[in-house]
Image (cartoon, rainbow, N blue to C red; front, side, top):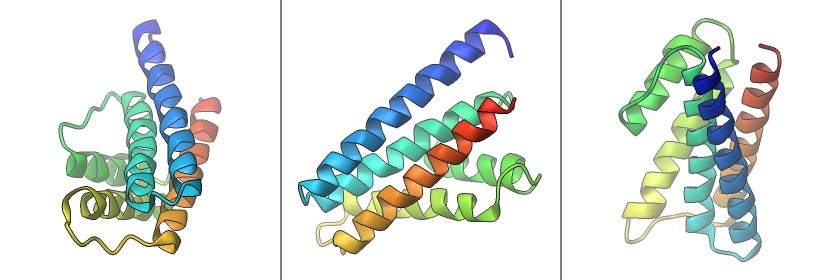
Length: 130
């Protein structure tokens, strides 16, 4: 991996860690919709980082889900559950950000933060092994 890509990967991972920290703070403050949104963005930035190592970038949120599934899950580099986590987080984020009467409760928010944490950890572990 060249120096520029390595710098971008590290920047995305730092941003992912910060979004996860904020999601945890929002969850503790009972701001469930915003916690879900930040949890998704933690996963989003972590996934952008790992896609860069494959020479890929996503132009849309759905594109990110698709690229991750095609190039990292279907190839066996990541377990299928991580692809589901990313898709679930995207869908829950869209509900929390755009739906007037979103059904984002504490359990949903806790689940989203946990999935984001697991995905970020898996990506950091994978990248550390490269």
